[in-house]
Amino acid sequence: MSKKSFRQAINEALRQEMERDPTVILMGEDISGGTGAPGEQDAWGGPMGVTKGLFTQFGESRVLDTHLAEISFIGAAAGAATTGLRPVAELMFNDFLGTCLDQVMNQAAKFRYMFGGKAQTPLVIRTMYGAGVRAAAQHSQSLYSMVTHIPGLKVVVPSNPYEAKGLLIQSIRDNDPVIFFEHKVLYDMEGEVPDEPYAIPFGQANVTREGDDVTIVAIGRMVNFANAAADALKRQGISCTVVDPRTTSPLDVETLIETVEETGRLVVVDEANPRCSMATDIISTVASRAFDALKTAPLAVTAPHTPVPFSPALEDLFIPSQMKIEEAVRAVMARESNRAAAE
Image (cartoon, rainbow, N blue to C red; front, side):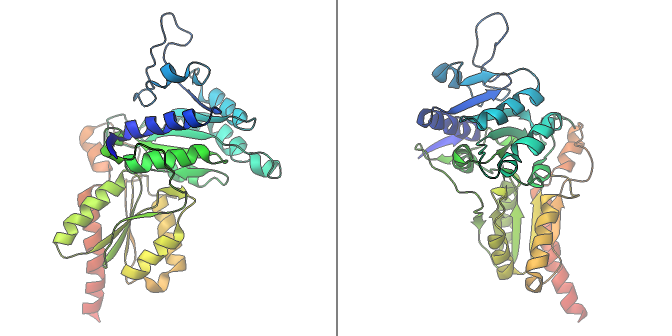
């Protein structure tokens, strides 16, 4: 097992799947560099260099630079997926879903249902999300909640390099459309990643910490903040279970319920805006299915219901932090203590 960055883990997953299966192709803006312009193609590898080197190995027939028109190439990728290819389309920022939502929501997500189960759509849309790099309101949103709402899509939000490689391989092999969310702050994060291919099944949450007092459910980058908060709280005498759902659709409700039944308290950490978010969905699901197990009302730690600020100071306040998670955990512990004292 080697130490790899999040970026390298994704690149390796793409390369190994392209070597294994000749129907896997890549599509996106600037992923090979130079198409349609004078000079040599430079294999830039996209804005973050994630696909760098793949054009050199697989050539222009399998690594396709596209026009700056998401409505065009996402639609083309969806069509290609129904005709025997396995496209991996890079949607540069998840904020650009607004320009191609019809192709995602009304086409790719619906093909299997519209054609009586006879049309498979093995499409992966890789996209960046999240705040923290001063990219302002139009390039920093977290929109996995929005596409989780759409039936027919599978939604993946990895939290570290190991998860990224295994979940991307599973995404490419899946026969349904998958939206694969990569937090832009995580690209340089390093971790132990096997050199050989491996797939992590969808709908199986990962319990990263085990404790008795509070269940913390965190999504994507927030898993790392939750782990750090749990470690700090343990030194304060509070024992936390941390759950990484890995996929928001399908969602591993069973693991969520089991851990809350063990702790009786729930904190959900979600970088997305709070209204109609994964945080509210998870809290609603737990409250409706395991209400009797809850010792006190759950809490959500989310971004505020505002666009992502460009101001560095305000952006830092916008993002859920380890400190805010610790405060929420202490708050749910105090609620029960206060209620007991009142009784």
